[in-house]
Length: 172
Image 1 (cartoon, rainbow, N blue to C red):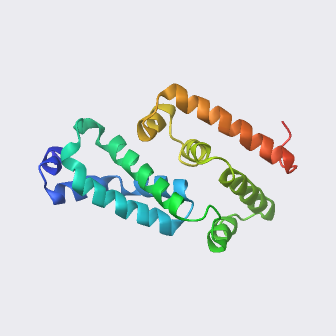
Image 2 (cartoon, rainbow, N blue to C red; image 1 turned 90 degrees about the vertical axis):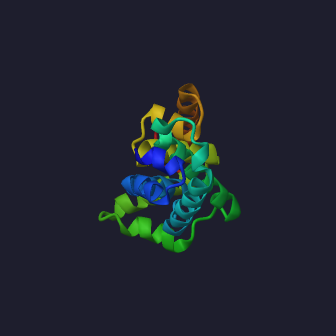
Image 3 (cartoon, helix red, strand yellow; image 1 turned 180 degrees about the horizontal axis):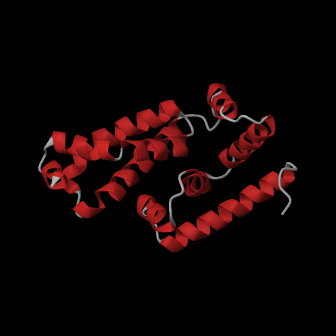
């Protein structure tokens, strides 16, 4: 019902739809940008775009996947606009969240290694392993076939393993 009202221009209905999934949207934006500020900016951009384009939604039952695809595009735009190097405070935040110093170092090296992969591999790895999305959900969000998701994930993992082996952090 809310989707139909939102398609007709009811802003309260659209806000209600967004608020139902706000945590999932934030986790996705954070996983894709790696930064809480950029994640918030991407969410704001997504909301504006949804307000402007809600009338274009063709399949109301796919609202969530459609919104996440828009969010992914907003994240990509933000990532293109900023440097690929994460600010020091974001890296420190990740490291400080681990109790064991060895775990902190492993997390830091893993995240740094992921951040050096091509963006298409970064987003697929983050969606799968940080957000635990299944293949179909990733395909819907990225608007690509499931086979392409599997291929990108396999290639991304292969490149990540090679990068970490070169650093002495992985023995395959």
